[in-house]
Image 1 (cartoon, one colour):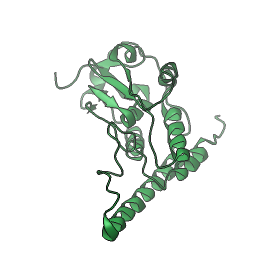
Image 2: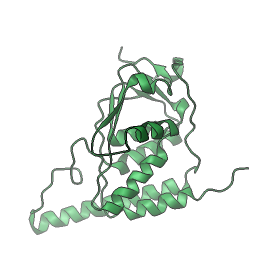
Image 3: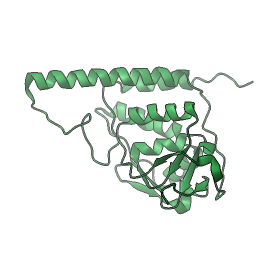
Image 4: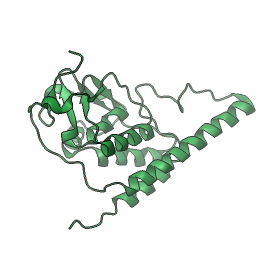
Length: 210
């Protein structure tokens, strides 16, 4: 019988720490969902605060979901270059994804995992998109030409940035963490993991578009 883990509580505490700000892992750094506009007047400020309030609520809801989710690490099976076969027909294809809000991707990750939805990586997957590598190994496959680009998150404060960075590193499978450490850790620089490397740890498959 598995011993109860304190991870859900730690996730809850970490997410509460950055719930006051909307966390972004950018290909292009943006504030909230649009361009920065520091002097918008009273009405603009009110709308901005409303968006921040909704974002905080989303993050707190996400924290509750993650706190009640399984605390175990993602299954880490080294499939090598074994083909995915017919299991991945109708899989969600991910490519040309430049990343975005960590909260959005974390929630989508949870939904995909709960639904046991298959995911096929067919192209670029940058920044927050790389959280999808935390899906169970038998739920993902890699098409030729796919690659992953890792980057440190940005946030309104240093403590929030540290919290989301720690969250991402906990979610990644061990082989990804080892690779990131070999690159010197997450930084402002985009570090690219190639298809040639990733195929050693993931099932390979063909894109449905070919």
